[in-house]
Length: 202
Ligand code: IMP
Image 1 (cartoon, rainbow, N blue to C red):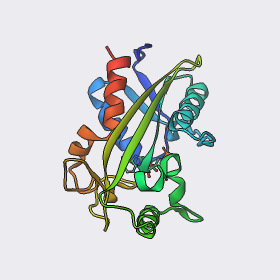
Image 2 (cartoon, rainbow, N blue to C red):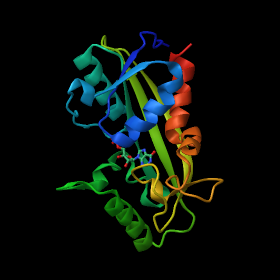
Image 3 (cartoon, protein in one colour):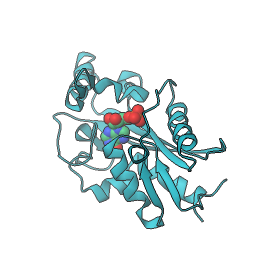
Image 4 (spheres, rainbow, N blue to C red):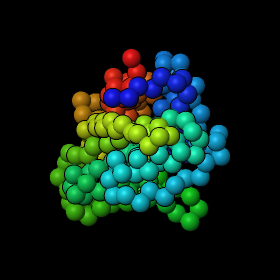
């Protein structure tokens, strides 16, 4: 597996929640981190129907445009009783003409579960695929997951996205109620990140 030894990495994301969490996870490695916005990059269209496919699109786009290794994150929540939805379309469920509205997306998720009279616990998993791509076209993928359940009402002010309705297994608070350091230690992103560290850092 190729190592990240150049000391520089572009985070191929415009999502502030993800950027904050990934920068935090990278902090111990002394890497010079910049973001897609720092390089004036556009957001490429995510045209694939898998987390890996979309992670590849984002990382390769940023690596080619900057000439630096790039790290992307494609992630989402998959709800068992909704046949895995919203899955790769997690961010799309929040789209409105005025930007993303995650409260609306969470309401929609819960309403569909109610409509189906889905059994409780309403099992779900957060998935995260990280892709490191180099300017020469090489890439490495790392997959992480955390199992839990969707709950209602929304609870907590930390985190981002669907955190207020996700309780990880073995806990009774949502990701949004948890101290961020605790979420970082157990999330789908932390799981994928531990694999990236084992593979790409010495
Ligand atoms: P994408 O990877 O840019 O397609 O977007 C993934 C979407 O999944 C984000 O916009 C969030 O809504 C959601 N998501 C991913 N990771 C998390 C997380 O750690 N907490 C809450 N929501 C998340």
